Length: 232
Length: 218
Image 1: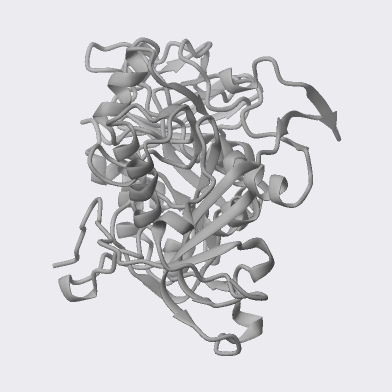
Image 2: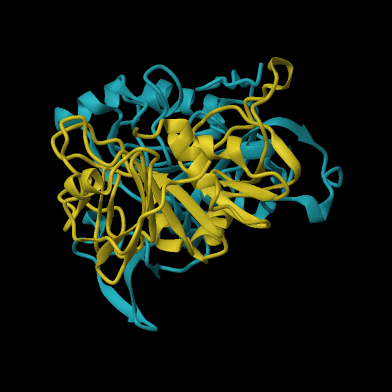
């Protein structure tokens, strides 16, 4: 790699340095906008005791769900895990620990983590089980709970286009958590559909500036759809 | 007669106002989009990052990168905006969404709602529901008035783990429209052919019935 060129040519390079016990922040919503090849590489590496922060945990045989097959995940922080039977079984068997987190709080934990803000107050979850043990503070007569931000050793995201400098553009609702996840990794890896030369992306249209991105790899995506619904 | 799911959605749709930004939850709330009254425009927000959700795509239009919060393939309406999850919940938490419609297991007379977890049964997670009930200006809950076994879902105090506190303002059930105010339920309307007595009987929380209660109009 030279200068600002972030492009790597193998998945081994893309995930180099990942070790047992690391925290991985992952973009994606359901199976939409997930870094499929990077997840497959984590499975190949057989890294264990991982903490995964992601809105969901894939399905049994796709997405982050494949990391459950060999019990690579120790803990997951997610807002909704209802699509995954293996996950439920490992939860019931005590193999995996889950910290259910409201979706907006999860997004903000990533955003704040990447922005150097250690915590924030939110009304979300006040008076519910997720507020247990958390500091409560009133602002203008309304109670809010303190939520701590989050960062990880790695962040893995999927984008539509990247230039060699790591500037990213996302496509449609495959954006979702990816921009926040990209800011919250010590090493952020972007798996993308297309790599272009610097200058080809319109600067004002870039969603994630390259400063957040350490490695870029071109992927081939299956793009599985969870629920195909049509009007005809 | 108790209302069908479609009729509950039709009644909720009467609450929509021109220019509203609306978030519809999964289930009956999703059906509300089919009954937007003529002459008004609303924009649907989907919390995965879409403001201006359009109809389901044709088979040719299906795009894996274009889904709603229920993970269904959708289209973007004319004038839609797409953004990241933090932005989406900034809209929600910041009170910019005019109306949220969602389902529930239980609601109580303090406006508390339980909708995400039944202990010892499957735990799937709250998704965006806690943020939505904490942030929306106006929340309508849709649900059946009582369980299949006849147990009321409108309680003095919720028994299940809460999704949010003091947030529900209005409830549309298969039997009635109710308002939650000052720690009690007020009966506003009844489903056609349903008696006030039946509603009283199936409401466990404190229910105020003032004067003649009109039937819902469709």
